[in-house]
Image (cartoon, rainbow, N blue to C red; front, side):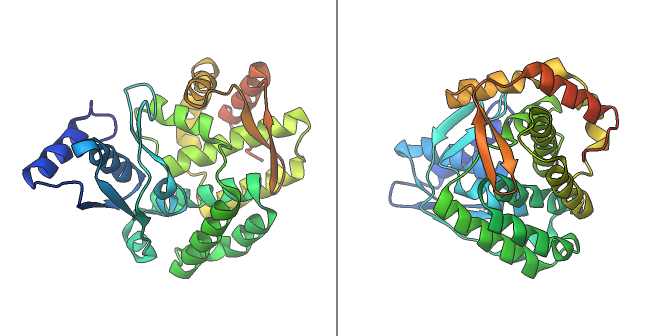
Length: 285
């Protein structure tokens, strides 16, 4: 619904106008990241913008999408191609919603916690390691603890783009059939492999991250995406799309578990070698 030529967003706009929603009202968006984006995009258009409250229902949205300061829809080939400012008036989280999501949505969701922990905060990474076995069993308390820990780090240190450029390109290359969490996990594998090849990250640290994601099922989409990962030239267009969206040619690369730095001039040939190894069944670790 994010890539349907605005049809879903315009349908929501029409319903809001019919209901006479105005600037004194609040739109409550309940759903995963895709729904939050489409509803937020619509709410930002009506009467110059109506207040939006986000209530995320998937693990990934609870840890990332719900806090975005924009709402976006996709074109056929570019993830988040059309964006509008959309800062939520509030984010309300009830982890009980996630108990009904598909297994793949649950498994991939931990990639967002991994992403922030590896790039921003060693203590968060350690908490992810501690909670991963329970999370893999779909334990609600483990998800709640992860969401709280991620929120605390985001409030203190902000966000990170680690792994996102590749994840977004993979989603668009798949026709948006590759679940977001799986795409993020693969994007992390690509940037982790690149960091090792650059000599910025220890291979043992990469192994810790990929083994954890594998144990939680976040890498279940890897085998089904080898045909996408193998299209290195196509996938590397994600670097160009990221530069256009961010205004910066750099990508964030981990230098340890809890540390990262920008690579101002990404080595495309090195990235291509990493992708080739990953696509050919080379272990993500």
